[in-house]
Length: 490
Image 1 (cartoon, helix red, strand yellow):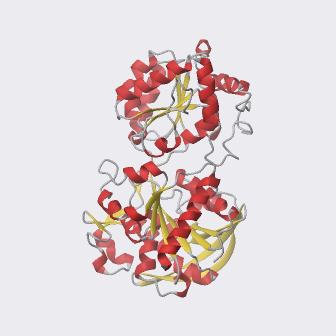
Image 2 (cartoon, helix red, strand yellow):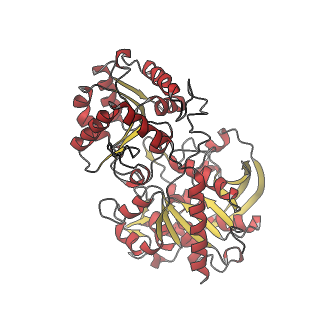
Image 3 (cartoon, one colour):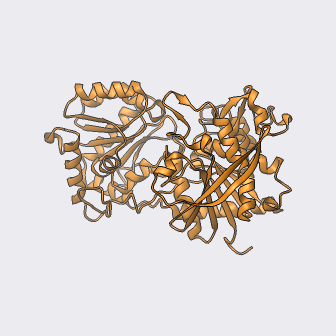
């Protein structure tokens, strides 16, 4: 096998530009394209959701009436294909499973048959590869929805010619989402009953898909080095820290890359003015536009403007923000927030915006244009996360010279270098203790640095010079693939 001349089958429950609920889709859309540029033959597989049909991408049917065993039945499915930037993507069509408005559930909760839906996804990989005559060297699975594939490969498909030399890589994007189901459904997995046990798929008397991926994959990755360490502790392990410790020898962290074709202040078409490290005038224009968009007091144009683009949830630290809002609004600063999430934060932030007109702006929405404007127009970006497997907004913020103020956890540690005012080094401000007091003190430290204009300009230039493109991350995955295959064949 020559360098990089091997086949990779990437399995993800979502990927841009086809279907998205979160950052996983960004990774699954960008990583395989970056890998192809390095010489790998990569194919992406995902369900044919209603959202895929609505994406406007051209789909071509490439296989009909493929079959797989499911409980007492034989199910059939069709396969469609699309091309994106040279990447071949396959979509599995079984409408009663996937032709729904949302991917995994409704605002009232998860779909009742998510086990059946993603058992189907896992089982479809064997007939798909056989039909395509595609023998993957690596099957790279993402999150709990595809976590059974390493189990099936080892327990049921090992003698199949398509998979004779295949190794599996399993990536955890967020350990909190594990795919838990009633044990009474275990028979639907079509696996030996002995695998439902403490050393198998059992987790507190439930089925745990994610645990299967962790235990059966040849290599396990997370989306930052720090998060790979954190999830082996009780604080961040979500009950699986012991399981992860047993796989520590094959557990690694690779920071997600970002697409600088989309997130680049010098070329961003969504901005009223572009800018770069050598000419920051455009950032001033973006700040003015952002303040007008949120109805902030123009008299505060020289005060630091803080921004947040986030899911409004406890994980993202909004409990800390709620606790410090009165004191924060007493400071000489303004704050804008964009996002959707828990109703309690919708209500709290809407009320707070009314209480602090001209100083606090809140939009309960997802708006890509405004998200770009906040990244470009804010002076600082707040990320007080309780945990953050990787995080992308802090990486976007760095490129836009919007200095992160964040908790030292997960990928935030791996991507933000603490500022040293004396040396004029660093790219952001970090706090360690998950307390309102520590968060407020960190904001105040950043605001103090903001008053020193030569220092602040240097911090901005430090931040904007960082490179978290997919190139480096993709090369790290290629190295991991080589190591995994070497272990598998040794």
